[in-house]
Each structure stands twice: as structure tokens, then as C-alpha cells.
Image (cartoon, rainbow, N blue to C red; front, side):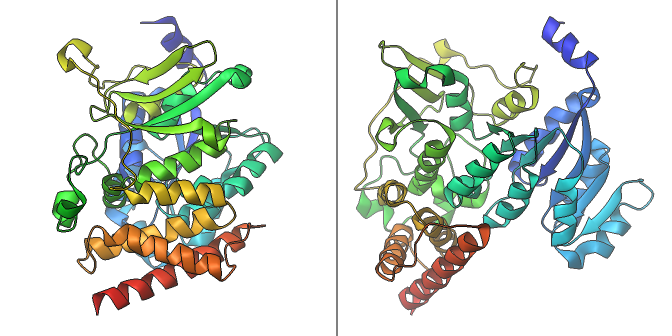
Length: 401
């Protein structure tokens, strides 16, 4: 056994709270915790409304409490946890109470804008935040990072690309960095023409070539909007200018992020496409821990290829880059419009290429109305989010008629 593992096991368990415990990130995290039960003390697990999944997970991880955001599910949760000794609670207030409990690490993995308020509330003096919720940085990046600085909290990126960059980004020498490069698989339609993409189905779009993810993020990968979101997030996570951020399409998903330095060095983080690697990096940081992921076999892989993204075929990426440059409420509106448009596509209301078309129309309209000013508080962000959702639903309805 390595010395670092011995040291980790001799230390007091890390007290951990998980927001979004039943999602894909939560499930991967649970696998790691189950394999290292003495290293972690699960304070609270928070989910939206899935009673059975949350109660099962809480029992597996011997959690102190299980919390659902949906207050109507309280009785069902109590019944599911009966005899386990695990405290049950439900409702928005219960979620905020859960993140206020003493914990060393809070994992923010709630999907969507619903994760914004509880993750912001989780930022407390000296606490470590492992962030997997994109909305915190896409929609409220300035507010979120200001709160991190105000409370002297530590922010660790869980997303595979951002975590990869974090591993090779020398913060002390940020002035000697030329470029930060995020890689993208290109999704299932990387080689499709725009004409071919007109008729793709939700079933086709949900078949990601490399990653196993939730529905929305899988569609966002297919449109490349997810990579646009990641660039916006990176602009807040790392001390670089917008023109220092770049995207490369890399179909093999072996290289997850790269940093170019002024001396000509190009540092890259590589690994198999398994979320347990970046999650484990955040859980054990600054050490590393043993994770049973498939090891990357470069000889078997044989070739690593890269290409520039095609913004004409994938306009969602262009829209995200433009929103980043516009700043203010543009990224929040971008995210909200995308969420509604993706839902409409998955339900068969609009076509695949209608997703970026809807988003562009909504952003243009809200910009013309002067509705995308900088947010001074979370409520401002939520109001812009709401306005974008309403306009996107109107666009979808008009398109469907």
C-alpha cells in the first residue's frame, strides 16, 4: 500500500455533503465512497424527488441524513428510511439546512438552475466545494466566484475537462500561460453535414460515442453547446483572458484538457473517459487515491487526432462564445433557453437544428429589450433565467404550430 493511502486512512474521515446525490455524478461518487468507507463520513445526501434512489443510496453510504427538494415526498421518504436511523427531511428549507451542517466538502452536482441557490449557500469559510453544477458558473459566475473569495473557500472543478486543466495549470505562473484548451469529442454527429442533422432523432442524439451522461448533457454534447458552457466556466475558474481559451475536437476522448505555456511546453491530462477519475481527484486533493477505472492504453489506442470545431455546423458553440463575450445576463439566458429547447427536442416538438435557432432568437430578443444586464444577486439571475424560458417556450410553440 502506498504511503499517501496510508496517510489518508490514518486521518480523520472527510465529512461530505452531496447535492444532486442521485444523478450520474452522485452515483460515481457513491462508488468511490463505498470502496473507501473509512475515509468519508457522509453528512447529508440531497436529491430532487426520487425517493427510492435517495433512500437506497443513503443506506448504502450510511448517511446522516437524506433530503429531498420536493416537500410532497417527505412522507414517502420517511417510510423508505424507517428503521435505518437516517434522518429524513424535505423541501427547499430542508435543502438549505442540509448545506449549513458542518462539512469539510460539499459536492455541488444538482442539475440545472435549481442547484444555484443551495450551492451558493454551501460556500462557507474554509470549506471545500467540488463543483459539478455548470449553472453556478455559467449563469452566476461573477457572483459565485466573488462569494468563494469572500469566504476564502476552496473551489475544485469536478467536470472532466476543467479538472484536467486544473491538474496541469500552474496558478503561480499564470502569467506564463498562453492558452487553455478544452477538448470535445464532437458528439455523435461530428461528421454529419448540416443537411443530415436536420432529420436526426432524439434516440440518435442520445447515443454519445464515449461518455455515459444524463439526457440534457448528452444532447448538449451533440450540439456542442456543452463545450460552450465549459468555456464560459473556464473563464471564471482560471485567471486567463477570453482569447486565451480554445476548443479542439478530439474524438478519442483520451486527452481531456491542455495548457500551453510561453516556453513552448504543452501540458495535457489524459485518462479513460470515466467520471470517477476527476471526482476522486477532488475527493482526495491534494493527494490521489486508488480508483478502479480502466487504464488508458495508448498503444492499443494507437492514434490521437484533433481538429478545429466547425462553428457553421455547430452554431451552439458560437452562441456560447458570443454570450461569454457579451457577459451580463447573456450566459444565464443562454443556459435557460438551451434547457427548454433541449426538452422540446427530446419531446419531439422541434428538430435538432431548431435548438440553436431557438436560442439565438431568444438571445437576440432579450438583448434588444435590454433585459440582459449584469446580476447583482441570485434573484436577478433567476429572473433572467425565467424570462429566457418563457420566450423559448413561446418560440417552440410558434414553431410547433
